[in-house]
Length: 84
Image (cartoon, rainbow, N blue to C red):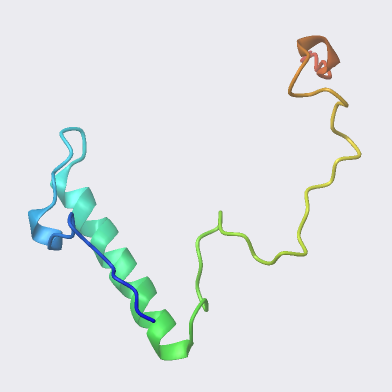
């Protein structure tokens, strides 16, 4: 048994398409942060540092007791908040 893996669009980091609306210096800062994150994870073990939006575990579920019963299907089911 064998598997074939194709990576046709794999290019080097310096050959990627640039973004018209991103300042190159901010992209360099992002690259440095990612390199630091990778170095810490290599030194202390996988998933030592993670992004805030990553799922921590499969046991996590949002609390639904305050959610409207039809929050995705009816605008009238959404709770109202009035600022004074």
